[in-house]
Length: 357
Ligand code: ADP
Ligand code: MG
Image 1 (tube, rainbow, N blue to C red):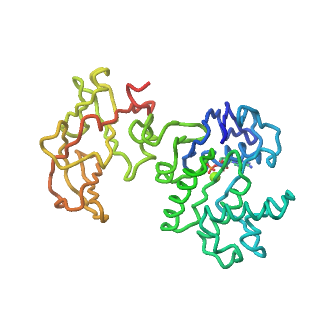
Image 2 (cartoon, rainbow, N blue to C red):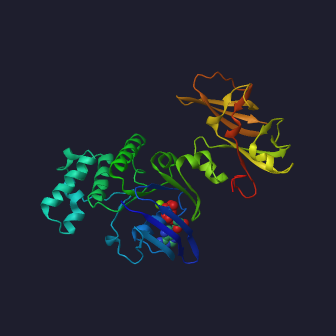
Image 3 (cartoon, rainbow, N blue to C red):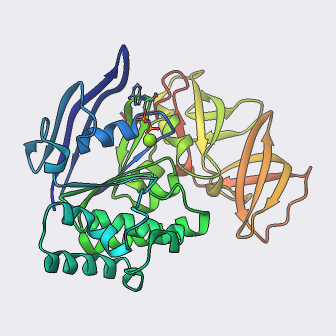
């Protein structure tokens, strides 16, 4: 178990700055997820931690010691990639133990480590097979096993589940969580999948364009998004964003008579433009709620567990996730209720949440 610290790490390719100053300090045993769209710099940061790429400036410390200049092999780090190249001619057991074999670890010790890893991953019965005789999920387990036997101080994962089909991805996600709960190794895990991030992480770093937009627990990221970008990235369907203006401590929604009570609006001057964010799952059909909003139903989609209704408030679109048994007719006007503290207020100029520093 090890701490990991990333201090003002920057990376430029030519004149393009890919990482623009990353600061993260992880306690031992944390599971950090780097979450962001393709191209935001996640893999670059992971490769710098692993020593596969060099930072232009900044420092990476494991257990308080800088590893800059330390060869990847000597960093005590294991990395699992999206594409897990296994040796096709070697058995599962030898694939898992290959790193140890290269390091001339005695056969008995190697064998013990391989068996231990295989047991953890529940692939003991596959040790004699060749990779071609395995399913995608089993192959990914072997790749994880190969990383596991080295007993690294830090585990790095770069979109390890992206190549798996949806059902397997779900299964492996739970598996990874179980493994982390048992081993408590410090993990940095890269993904663009917000559900993976929410379910696996002890903390999430939401990245955008080479910067960390917000670093927090999944609950903090979901309940208190610091910016419009984070609010839109985490949650599905995404948070509704209604344009409005402040009027007497309330938010008047553009194109509607609705005035929403928002605590943060009290600090803003009348006429200030704001964006009121509300999650689809925070809305319900309710006339008696503390806050309400009239909306016209446009499209109704039953997903199974819920009814996703696309509506209009004036000209603005609003999506509500409602219980599956809700009766809604396209074209009707309903009143949506919600708790006042479910509203998030953003400054449309800066994109930052109002009143939250
Ligand atoms: P992510 O993993 O978030 O998809 P990457 O870290 O792979 O993003 O890439 C971030 C940015 O850096 C991208 O714009 C990519 O084109 C650029 N980049 C990555 N590696 C190199 C490289 N070796 N040379 C030049 N540009 C690179
Ligand atoms: Mg990547």
